[in-house]
Length: 387
Ligand SMILES: *Cc1c(COP(=O)(O)O)cnc(C)c1O
Image 1 (spheres, rainbow, N blue to C red):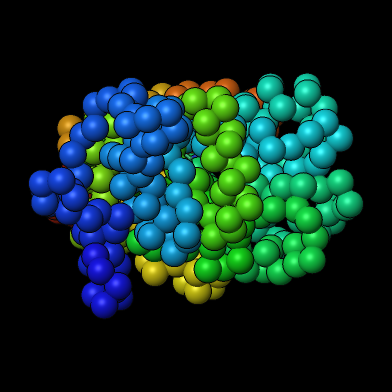
Image 2 (tube, helix red, strand yellow):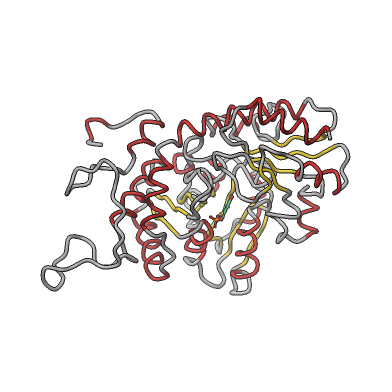
């Protein structure tokens, strides 16, 4: 879009972000540039592209879209969410310290604990719902604070602006995994974060057909450092995947509205069900840190976890295995609704004591509400929980 037409609404932004008509043909969709290299007119005389690990026109369009969606100036695309997280961690050196949430995506926790901790980086896993727990671990060796909000799978909310405030004047960077909220609902850069990370595999792609990650930042120096790592390591997505995500992003605004409406309907229905014990959804006014969620998020999303009154593994397993609309699968954020069992599936790599202390018990079931009709989702859960 030209500058005179700068969009104000999120859906308008999502449809147009990063995408200019192709300069050579006017094609409204960015072509899939399936090329590894670019012919030079003379040595060093090229059109801005030399080799596709460094940059590719389809990926460039997507990276511009990523930046625009988060209100940043810079976007980077990676071959997975974990590759994006890894790029941030690679900026650290032995002796550096990281303060991270204690309820993180299982793979994030595994990367920190099994790879970076043995290299001499010290991690403090704290409950970031209370900024005081972050303040308590902050010292002159802290270089990174890693937040997830809402968290996976307990939907815990941390106040991004309050934690950013603690870091003012401190060299530590604040990175926020914004996968669950999506840029449609929450923009951590506007709350004071330095880096936003997404598992694009989830809502940004939105159709369960791509694995990809993203980093966004407002700071040119942070971007330059991360871009060098992206090129040095080469964990980049291919052009076809970039095209699929450019297409997926166009409907992000409308999809997230439906995810949120379904999330609310399902959460309220679960809350009233006699066989359901606890429902984890940040939209409830009684949910911990609901006020922070209401302030920093536009709406509360389609992710819900819940436990059953019968807290046996057999009971939660039976529910997970008897839904018909909700598919039993890991991952989330696609148009189709998914159900899964965190303790046995997505969070099996988190040590059992850690899971127990957080409340990721054998009864916990996680839902990703898709964009189907709410009545069908509720009828499906009704037959599965009632059986
Ligand atoms: C899935 C996920 C990741 C990891 O992303 P991949 O694309 O699977 O590598 C990180 N954080 C959160 C919150 C996730 O849900």
